[in-house]
Length: 239
Image 1: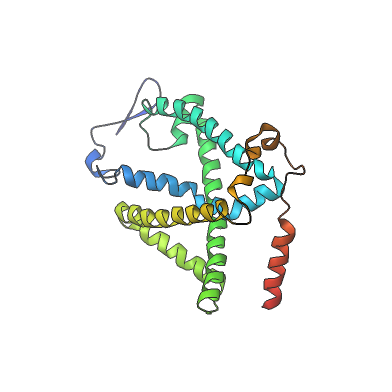
Image 2 (image 1 turned 60 degrees about the vertical axis):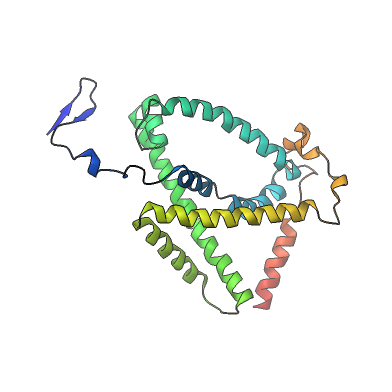
C-alpha cells in the first residue's frame, strides 16, 4: 500500500523495501573515486583533442584561455548555490531533483528528458571517436587493419563489463586512465611552453585581454581548417 501526504507526494508505507537492501551500499566509493568520476565526466583530453582546434579555428582563437577563466568564475558562483541546495535535496536524481523542487515536476521531467537525450548523443559521438582514433593508432603502431566499428564494439563491451561489476572496479580503472590522461596533457603543455621556436619571453597576456576573449571570429582567430582538411585528404589518398 502507498499512502499520500497532504501535499500530494507519495509516502512509502511500512511494507516498502528495506532501505538497507535498496540503493548503493554504504561506503561503496570514497572521496577519491567520486573525484575520478567527476573529472572523467569532464573528459579533459577529449576537450583538448576534439574541441580546442574547433574553438581556435572558428571561435575566438587564442582568447580561449581567457574564456576558460571566465567560465570557471561562472561555475564557481553556480557552485555556491548548488552546495547550499544540496543540504536540502537528498534525492539521487541529480539536476532533475533540483529543478523539480524549484520549478515543479513538469519542468523537472523535461530537464531529465533533455539530459538523457544529450548524454546519449554524446555517447554516440564518443564511441565513434574512440573507434576511429583506436584504428588509426593500431594501424600506425602495429599495422593491423580492422574496421573502426570493431574498436567501438570493444569499448562498448568494456564499459558494459565495468557497469555490471562493482563500482570499485570502475573507480580503479578511471583512476588509472585519468592519471595517464592528465600526464599526457601535462607533457603536451610543457612541450608547447618550452618549445625552442616559441621562447617563453615572447609569450604575452593578450589571450586574457577582454578584447581578445570577446573577439569572436576576427583576425585573432587561427585558421586551422585548411591544414586539417589537407591532412585528411592525404590520409585518404594514401589508402
